[in-house]
Image: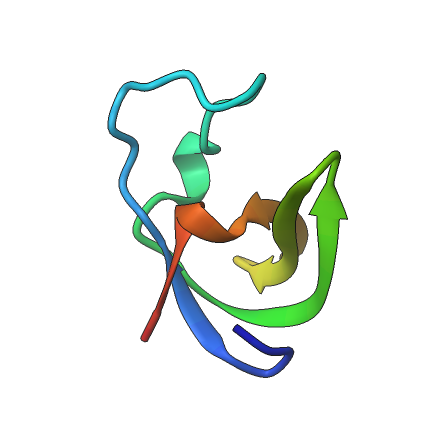
Length: 64
């Protein structure tokens, strides 16, 4: 994934993921990757979705 890619937030599968659940209000929504980063040692992305910037692990996102 790169900045500018259009992504969809994957659906919540009920698993506890390293200290955080996928935000329910963003599940299934489409957004744009703003920047890349890391949360602890996990690759992550800042995504503009529903008018807000949110951080997601890369495994929580899928390219559209």
